[in-house]
Image (tube, one colour):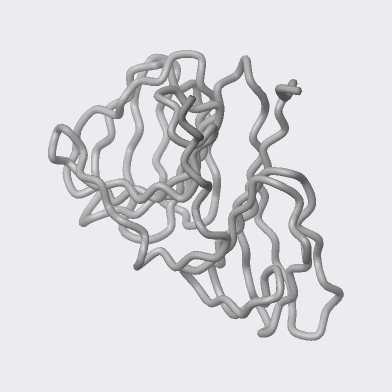
Length: 199
């Protein structure tokens, strides 16, 4: 039996994460974490997508999706029961991943943060954390998570991080602290809560 690929390194910088082109040529995806590693179907997945052209989103039946604008002019999302303009940075929007959705750029290229969770396997939560320098540290709790710095400077799991940098984990962090180093610092924090785990 071949062992599963190891999880990605704990700390990351978006600029160093490989970008995979979409099949339709409309953009690229930088995968921050997909679980289980190497599996053909994910239980949960966190990524950053660069949308360069209008077009359909891939459908993911039975998957709960959350999308959040990081930069750019945004995108209009339209599908059955969905009519949303993603124009405000750092404001998550949740929708059914199985619904066919058309994404129309509202200007230039849009960069978006994406969280997907297979609904039968568990629940993913996406929180926006704000803090000031010298404030009480926050705790990045849980066995599975991704934290991405949106603004300012932080110390995450013992290492400094600025916008576009973060930490990801698939077991509780030895040092789960998240300490803001500058005023107005903002952080996106994703947790995944599995319904059951293999013994």
